[in-house]
Each structure stands twice: as C-alpha cells, then as structure tokens.
Length: 408
Ligand code: C5P
Image (cartoon, rainbow, N blue to C red):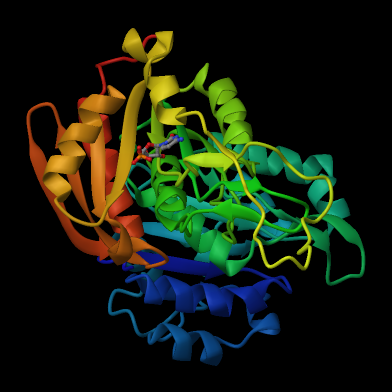
C-alpha cells in the first residue's frame, strides 16, 4: 500500500550506530510512496556513507550548508520549503540538545530551525545509550523540543550496541514507518474509544482438539490499525491468530467465545464504537474432557454434544450503552451468496446501525477484500482493495455516522 504517496520527506541522520536502521527506513518510506531527501551530519557520515543513502533514496545527499549545488546557496531554506515533514532518525542526544537550544552551525540543525514551523512538522526518533537517555539533561531537552512543536516517536528497549540493556534504542524501521504513516492520517476518530473483536474463537474439546472457524484476523487487525491511525484509543480482543499487534493498540488475547464475550463486555463499558469482525464459533462442546478422547477400538466415533455460544455482537448491541446511543455497533457478515439480502436481514436481526457484508471464500486469509456497507437507508460497495485501505474507508464511514459528540 502506498500510504505515503505524494509525500516528500527530508530524512535527517545524526551521529549514532542506529544509522544502520536508517537505510532500511529510507527504503520502506520509498516503498510506501514517499520521495526522500536525505540530509546527514558529519557524525552520521561516520556511521553510514552518503553514497549508501544516495543509492537508496535516488537523490544526492546533503551534508553541508555551503553546498554549491544550490544556486542561491541556501539548502536549509530550499530543502525545508519542499518538505511535507522532516524526520530525524536517528536523533542523537547531542542533536536533541542542539535543537533545544536552536543552534544552527551545520546544515541539519539550521534546516530544522529554518523550517516553516506551522507547515513542516518535525518527527524525532531518538537513539542513544540508556544512561544518556535517562539523563535529566536529555529528558529536559526532549521535553523542550516537544514543547517547541516536535513530535517525539519514542524509543525501543533492549540490548544496545554498547552491550548494555535498557531504553534508548531507535525504534525499528518498520515501527517508524507505521508511526510516520499514522502521523499523516486524518484524525476522524479523535476522542473515540474503538473496540474491535478479531480472528476466530477456539472451543476446546479436550487438551488436544477443538473446533474453530476460518479467520486470519487480518480485516479486524486492519480496522484496529486504521482506527488507531484515525486518532482513536483502540482495544483489540483477538482470538488465536498469528498477527503482530498494531502499534499503540491495546490487545487482549482470548481463546473461546465465552472469554471473548467477557473481555468485550468489560471493554465495552468505556467504548464509543464497537466493530465485531470475529468469526465466533456458533457452538461449543457441551463438556470439556480433561484428558484426550481416545479411540476405543470399536470403530464407533464418540458422540459429541454441543451448546450454542453467546452472540457477542447481539449482546452488546442490546446493552444499555448501545441502546442509549453512546456505543455505535458495527457487525460483519461472511456470506457465500445473496450478499445484499443476507446483509440487510442480518443488520435488522442484530439490531445494529451498520453491517458490513463480504463473501467468505473471497476474503479468508487474503490481503485484499471487497465490502458491502448496509445501513438503514443505503447499500454501498467498497470495491476490492487491500484490507488496510478498506479499513481506512470504513473508519471514515463510521466517523460520519457518529453523533456530534459521543456522551460518556
Ligand atoms: O450471525 P453471524 O455469525 O453471521 O453474525 C456475524 C456477526 O456477528 C459478526 O460481526 C460477528 O463478529 C458477530 N458475532 C458475534 N458473536 C457470535 C456470532 C457472531 O459477535 N457468537
């Protein structure tokens, strides 16, 4: 997905071993559709060469404010005026100190100070040793540059190049890409708390086996990410799936429908939007065997009894919060035919304002899908596209249907 299409970014590198991650970040930004102009300090050039960054960005790298390539000899003005954002990755402790003081004796800090502050955001990915990170001077400088309008992207924790373990590692390139993409998304759900169920449930029969449904969780995880990108607080209740948690999303892992109901009911007390994408098993075994159910040699299979699982969406949609308009509920329907009729009927049966239909076999495990949005007045198709793109469109559709201000 080209989430950064049309964006021109200045990628500023300062001195730190994390510069090796900036090469990958540059590639990911370009893959996401951005154009990237790299600017490096002399210290950064000790860690990774401008040649590497030029080859990856497809543009000559700037390292000096005296660069003769600029006709007016003002690279700090020209480069910053063209940018949609300046991304400092890595930002060293020294560079943060320079920014905090507004120093301008080399190109990158000069450019940061010269940028039109209301139009060109400054995104900062710090990287340093854990003691340097924890030092009051660093924290003071970072607080100052935030107060001056910079966006701090946080740090990772773990083993550092110096051999010590702690906070201060630069975030991974993929994490930075996610944060940069999030930054540019419209904040249509700011102030909302979005609750999403995703994936299948697993209903254990014995310690070895159980029944479950087809569901990769990809659509639900994409919706959680899109809601987060749109500025919402997001709780994701996930059945057993192998997907990474979107950044900034609170994830609660569950197995059975009962567990999913419990976690969802608890989170729904403060949620303002509920999107049920989970493929919940309709039935669970009436009893759970403590030991593996063995073949007894008679050739007769065991007789299994099932009980119906709670309908999580229906339960929440009939709750006081949803009924009083404080919780907007969205359901999904996976059908194999007659999508419009089934989706309309299901919306009414579940008692929800919006139902999203899709054709099961065309979505299971896929990275793209097409959706049919059914509300009380209309039916709208979102044509086949990557699930994250559809999720972003769905988020806008949900935002447009929310009351002006959701009352707590
Ligand atoms: O009735 P059906 O399973 O087709 O409904 C699908 C919708 O209801 C989905 O949004 C699904 O997440 C939700 N659902 C649920 N609990 C169930 C069954 C379905 O929340 N037990």
